Length: 317
Image (cartoon, rainbow, N blue to C red; front, side, top):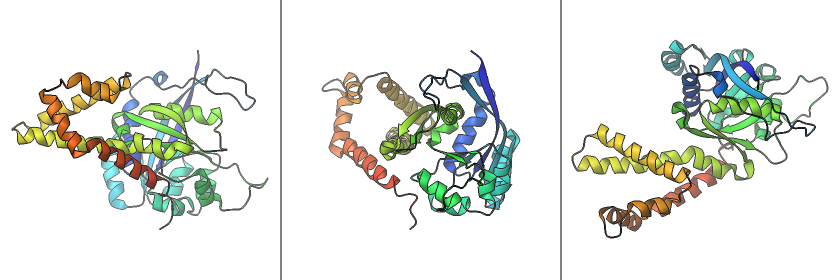
């Protein structure tokens, strides 16, 4: 089946840790055949509810990164400049004007002022705006760009806004990326397919109802920090017993990947633990320490508390 190749200019509007990770993963994917990064549209329908079987592959043509601080621009130029990324300092509108697709990756507290910059509304006209800003709804993003006034016949085509939640594992192309679909705001297939293709360059992509978006985003994007903290504890234990840190990191990361692979294959976390821990054995003794310390409950509480905060990230203090 023929693949429709979309060669697009992409601008990263704000380039914090998350969007920088996405940029890094995309850049590392460019050496691979673009046919790897396609999304068949069989699960979707057209506006007339007729199935479409096309395949789309998004290929970045030019990439721009826009930041407001000079020192941030210098750092990005050093890291991404040799890879062909054009870095602009205090040039948000100029960067957006040159793009077909814009990735909004600013802090939740400043998205409004960035999108309200003079000239930004016209620069975004008719383009994809992919927001990776946590906790900020499409309604808030549209209000920041267009205000509260209704759409008029004379108005240019509005930007097509899609909310996406990747993780920093995008840097190594292991992100579990969520496309958040809000209530009464169903994305059209022609919007979804290019986004699936682009973010498949940095890992797995899933369409997720926004009613559970704060929970899903916590699991997909926040929980790696919690697992990394647990990994650090295991490494410190090995160091205390005399092992070299780099060697301990390598072994512990491999062990965590193995446990995750077993769970991903269909085994429950409890099954994995029981298979490893022989009653009365050394592993069982270590598990008892974790249970007495309440590790499982602590992880549960961390997920609940983080998810409860996500929805308010876009609110003004």
